[in-house]
Length: 119
Image (cartoon, rainbow, N blue to C red; front, side, top):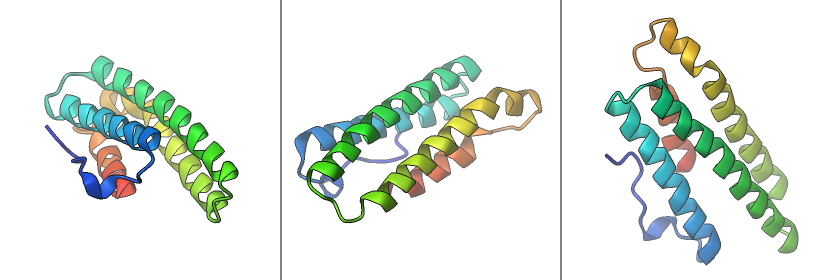
């Protein structure tokens, strides 16, 4: 099940960055799939952990490129990175309690945010 489809319009032309972006989309799509299929908190939590770690790793590499190539919007882009990491981390911290509190689909808001954020 695909939430975000990778296509050539998403390529930046930097092979390592494009591969990492593809992998991020794959993780997001696995999160979507696990949620839709109702795989449970353990499966979703594991994918969330992977998303947090991989995103932080990717953003760190991307920010090194910002500095290396004197990217003019580096500070704004870094703030966007920080906001995404915070949003996903906050969600992961509250995911299991949201399930216990009876929220039917606590991941729906996060997935919608990720879809919009990606575009």
